[in-house]
Image 1 (tube, rainbow over the protein chains, first blue to last red):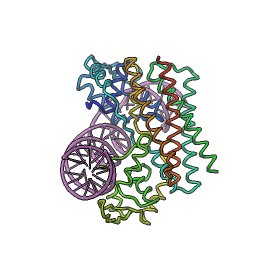
Image 2: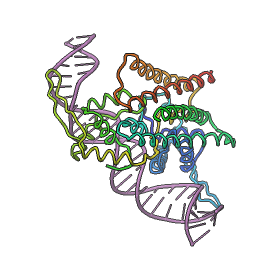
Image 3: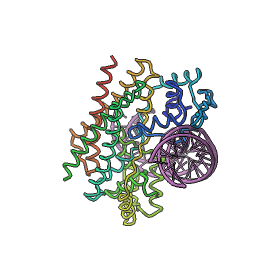
Image 4: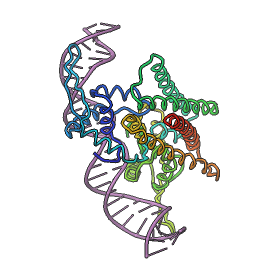
Length: 175
Length: 175
DNA sequence: GATTGCATGTAAGGGGTTACATGATTTT
DNA sequence: AAAATCATGTAACCCCTTACATGCAATC
């Protein structure tokens, strides 16, 4: 496991250190912050889990469930905790993944005026949806379990607000 | 070329429609917005250019340069313009790439208090650097050639400001 | 009876990065 | 004389997505 790269594996290892989870649980967690962080596919999630298991960084416990299908709950081992600690100490590289929204925005001149406005409106509705989703969560008191989630939550709200403001400003200017 | 996916190829095609550029030029352009959008490596940039050339969506012109090494300038063909127009008409999918900064932030609970503060400070200095870079560009009047760059520029400023505000708020609370 | 939610997985392929390789010219 | 900038490329590899495959339970 590379020391300085952020991969799904590392994050999973970290999440499992906070509390035991199944692959499905992890996916749900990511989905709830999908717009902001992105959500790994099962096709990367489960193999990552298997690799961590193989390297004995996590351990698994099958939890048979009457009614519902059985769950496989994973938790970090001592070895895993050491690897995690070491990794977190590495300075984070400042690499930005290519952002689809902005890559397309760069091509603004190639759009027709209506096309561009349409693109921005589409984005706006996505941001609004995400923003509403976050606020609804806050309203019906979905407890935020850990600091990480709380930070992400606030970050998401702040960014959504800032982007909405920017979008409205641009859309006003374009008309 | 997939219709609904944003790839380096599409963006390159779009940029070359706005003005002829070399591979190096394209890289420089991306680098200037690196923190925000990300910058494709030469290892994906040049092959993408070759593929576009192969499909006759762009054409190349060798510009011999006394003094400096020769440049290969690419521009979009009529065929390329049609393909681009068609692609831009496709609705954009709302896929978010996995964001390293936030993935790591999710693991806040696994950090020591000082470790977390350190991580946030590191991020802060990166944002400050990017913000200063943008403002310097504005100050010494680097003309912004096209609408896309102008939009990205403003978006970048807005987001950098919002993130700085959030970071300062969090850092204050943590101490 | 069909769709949604819970739950886990695999194989092929895509789209990128890293590391390598080269070379001239300009600045320090 | 060294470093940075300009300039182009290739090959191996990595990580992740897409599409596929399965099955039970609850709800509509």
